[in-house]
Length: 192
Image (tube, rainbow, N blue to C red):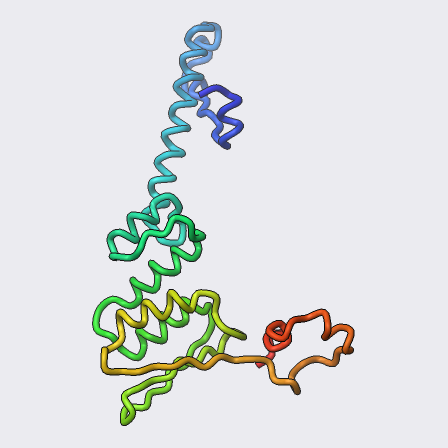
């Protein structure tokens, strides 16, 4: 790896000459060898860190496919890495016996906010209320797929979303309001 390549990839070579007695500084060929070895050592360190990052879900990038394969998830390389990590996270949270807490944790992972679960045992159904975020969470299709996998087959479910009430909207002119879509008004300002 040349110095230019090291700069391009953010890899700075290890200066091995620092570890040797000063009289080696005078031997030009030895300095070239140590410089080359230092570049290779830094490249190895960088690769080691990259491989280690694949072992942890929050830092995995090119290793996400292995996580998906291990958990039996569809491998969708066209999807953003954050979406794929969310799928893996939800699957990990949803393994084992399905409990109320498991569904709440999984829904919270998908929505990024607080979730309530209301059960209606006599009716064999439950409602997932997304109360910590406004509007419909972005990956509902993924959440529904995961929910279908973990919930008991005899239970029905529905969703309730939180929107901004008219009275909670800050005062704004019609001109300001006309610049927003209906959905943007319903999820405006973080008010619930």
